[in-house]
Amino acid sequence: MTQIMDNQTAEPVEVPLNIAVLTVSDTRTPETDKSGDTLVKCLEEAGHKLGDRAIVPDDIYKLRATLSNWIADEKIHCIISTGGTGFSGRDSTPEAVTPLLDKVIDGFGEIFRMVSYDEIKTSTIQSRAIGGLANSTLVFCLPGSTGACRTGWYKVIQDQLDSRHRPCNYVALLTKGNAQHV
Image 1 (cartoon, rainbow, N blue to C red):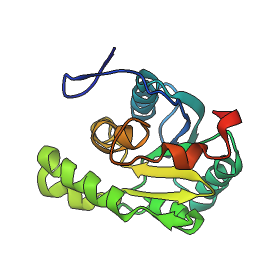
Image 2 (cartoon, rainbow, N blue to C red):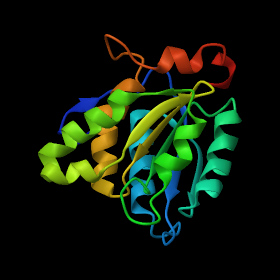
Image 3 (cartoon, rainbow, N blue to C red):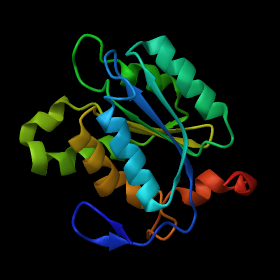
């Protein structure tokens, strides 16, 4: 059984997905990447597989290069990034990701900010969390704090990556035609 944030338990997913984790930071290293570690722990505890992981500086073109490689990789079903979604001078994750998306999931950012309000009140308006679909790969972009990563995973992303979640989830869309890679 997996222990989750709200002290509830959940069985591992029936259809494990390959999820890539991207940390957007000019300063973090593999040893100091707590947000990336949090996402890896969350996805693995849910029963998913870490497909790849990278730390990339907050540079639009370096971000696009890494994301584009993962989006083109049939074995990667989902990408979750952490960092670069704020308003400081170098925060550029939404600008890097948006042109790569075939479809934007408007509700992802809306719901993320709604559930974040309970934790950080109006500071949530400074989050430019976004989600979308690119080449049948889900992309979710979260703020860089470990708290935001836990909130994003447990209160939004986890259910959408579980084939048992009703009335709908993204699993069939991500694995259709790619069952051999799951």
